[in-house]
Structures are given as structure tokens and as C-alpha cells.
Image (cartoon, rainbow, N blue to C red):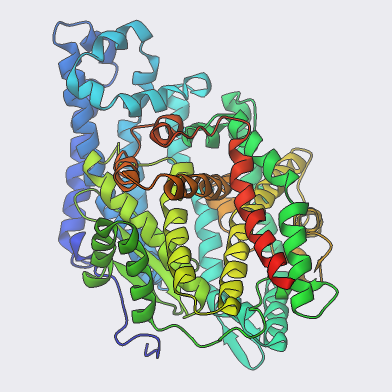
Length: 597
């Protein structure tokens, strides 16, 4: 696994969870959790309303909530471990078997305790009004209120349990098939057969021919497998439509908005604002980039090409570590101290290799352990930004962990805030260190591209999802029909300065968010625009900002976005909030245009 980027391969150490895949402790924990779930069910199922009618009912409910939290952490530990092992060895049959068996065992445990949230939802408001007086019940009030927001669409206990149990052979099975397919695919680039991560990395190469070769190889393999990808997409879109109809939800994304604890009108305002800005941001920037590259319009494989004069040397891992930790420490030393532990204590898995899942993530693990970060580090400047992004998540998850298994979980919209803020800190740190105007120009251009990928591209993805799910209601879609919708959305968002060359119609295939977490992608745009506004507050009023920011991260899932943003004087429900976020992007483009003069 030797690699010139690393002095020593940074691989994560999962022993904080279990010493190995064959550890008897895994089976012991699963068995203990299963028996505990049986006991919990026997003591509480069908009895919550009666329990709360007793004099000490609120105290008993508080104890039950704490027990449910602790049981969940015990069950989650083997689940997290199997996921992380599988993420680095998705092509290993033994690992796949272990992963599947563990998921089945954990799903069975959660099936037993499913009643708890459903019964909490069935309680009358006046019953809970009395229960809030108990300190432990009050502690879990944010979680209870979040699940009670789902009451209008809740099915019977038997149906909810059926959906839960069948997810293993339904949506989860199709997601696993997608993951295994992506891990197994190899892309012929020139005389090489590359993984998807290696192939996509070639799109950032300084040589036009290399980028074109990479795009051609990616398109060819996607086209060869588009029937399978389209079948997975059709199946999961139909599965989503069935559940939406059965639950009586008013919109295909209602469930996602609810789980994100964000109002539909806020998402609609975000989407409308970003789409209205396409011309002033993406269209304007890509026209500028085409001019820099000396062409009338960019081929789609040149969209993320480095600018002329860019130093194409690879950034060693130790240098990337220093860049990010310096940026975090310059803002708040505590952030750097936490992030440093990810490097020093092997909480990161960095090298790209066959069998490893593509992309990057930070997994919160369980509160009694610590988060784990996965990246596929190839030494490109964007890999440094990705590292900062995931460590932003990691710091957030670390700070929220003391809230416990239930309350540490942060809605996806707010989860992206810390990650994007980490990127912004790293960018600003690099910008301050830039030695000349040309370096500043390249840094600003790179940041604009990252922001367009995070905001414009993700809202276009959200639009694509909505169009696909709407079209699927009228019947199954062919791969070519999906591709036509993809191209329509890309033309609208990227503008006339980016060509939709043959082959690009299949590039919807590889994006996992469409399948794993439908309608999630707007969370990236939410986080980017929110961070733009947050950073503006920091620049205007730096005194005390760091403390408020860390307090916001430590809140985990205990507060909604209005409550979290109030100390900063921000409100995402206001009409001009999103426009302020987009103005940061257009402002950077203004700077780039001024540099042309």
C-alpha cells in the first residue's frame, strides 16, 4: 500500500469499538442487547399511558428514556463497527457476510423497541405537559418533540414494524447492491484500470487530454452498467412513492424535511433563491473560466480543471494536516486540539485503495467511543478541502457526544454547518498566506468552484431528484429518460459555457445520495449559505464568537435551526437570509472579474 503521499499509511484503529471482526464481544453485545430489548418491551410496551397516570409516572418515563438511550448505544456499537470495516473492504466476501449478519441482528433488536417511539407519539399533549416537569423527561424533550412531529404520518405499530423489518430486503438491500457495484467497477483510463476515486481524481489533472481520457473511461463504464443503475433508481423511487402515499405525506420530501427539522417553506425559499442565482453565479463563473482556458465553452470534463499556472505538485499528508490544524487553531485552539486527536490516535483512514468506499465521511460512532473519518486522499488541493470538511464534522460530533446516543444526533442541515465552516476556515487561512495576486486568484477561483459544487450543483441535484421521483409516478423510466432529465437540469444550472458532451448523460449513475438519503442534498446548500452568513458575523463581531460557535456544536440535536442561530442574530426563515449567502459567492466572482482588469 506504499504511497509517496504518506510517511506511514494513516489507517484507522477501530479497537475503541472492538479488537477485531472475530471478537466474541460482538456476539455478546448483540445477545445482551437482544435480551435487554425483550425485557424492555415486556415492561413498557402498551403501558406508557397507564404508567404516566401514576403519581411517579414522569419519573418512570424519564428512567425508561435513559434506558432506551443506553440500549440503543449497546446495539449501535456492533452496527457501527461492521459498517466501518465494510467501508474499507467492500469487496471482501467475509466482510460482506459479517456486515450483513450484523445489520440483520441490529434491525431485529430495533424492531423490538420500535413501539417506544410510536407510543410516545400516541400520548395526549396534556399527558406530556405534566411529564415535562421531570428533569430526565425534560432532558429528552427535543427528541420526543422531533418524533412527535411525525405523528400525522405515523402508521399502525404492525405496519411500522413491517416496514422496518422489510427494509433489509428492500431499500437497504438495493443500497448495498449499489455500493458493491461501485466498489467493484474498474474504469479503463488509457492503459490503466482504475477505481472510481482514482478515475475522478484525473478530472483535476492539469492536462486536457488526461481529463478527457478520464471522462471517456468513466462514461463508458457508466453506460455499460446504466441498466443496473436505472433499475436500482426506479426501484427505490417507487419504494419511496409507496411509503409517501401510505403515510399520507403531502410531498415526496416531507419525511426528509421533518427528519432535518426544517420547515418545507424554508427549503423552498433556499431552492428558489439558489435557482434564481444560477446566471449570476455559475453561468458567470464558467464563462470566466472558459476565457481563462482559452475556449468558447468548457467541455464538461474541464469544469473542475486547474487554472493555467497552477502548481500541480501533490500535497503530502503531513502538509495537509498542518494546513487544516493551523486553520482550525487560528480560529479556536480547542478545535485544533480535538482535530489533532484524529491524526494522533488513528481516527482517520486516508489512503485510497481497491475495495474502499468512494468519497468521504465522518461517522459519529457511539458516544462512549469517538468519531471516525474516512477520506480517499490523493494529494489534490480539493482533498485538503475535503479533509477540512470531514474534520469539521468530526469536531462537531466529538463535542455533541456528551449529549448521549439519542440527543447527540444532529439534523443533516445543521450537520453540514460545521463541515463547511471548517472548509471556510482553511480557505481563509490559505488566502492570508498567499504570496502574490496570481496565487490569490487561484485560491479564490478554487473556493468559488467548491461553493458552486456545494450550492448550485446540490440544488440542481435536489431538482433532479424531484423530477425523477415525479416522473416515476407515471411509470418506470429508462436509463435514457433519466439521462435526459439529468442533462436538462445540468444545462439549466451550469449554463451555456459548459458543454454537455456525449457520455455525460450517464453521470447521474454514481451519486449515492440519491439512493441512500433521498432529498438530502439540499442540506449541503443549506450549510454553505448558513456558513457564509455565520462567517460574515464572525468578521463583523469576532469577540465571543468562538464560544458561541462551540456551544452551538455541543448542542447536538437538542435545538432547531432558529434556536441555534438566534445568538448570532440570524434567522433562516427570513426572506433575505439565503440571498445574503449567495451574495458571498457572487462577491468572490466580482473579485475575479476585477482581477481581469
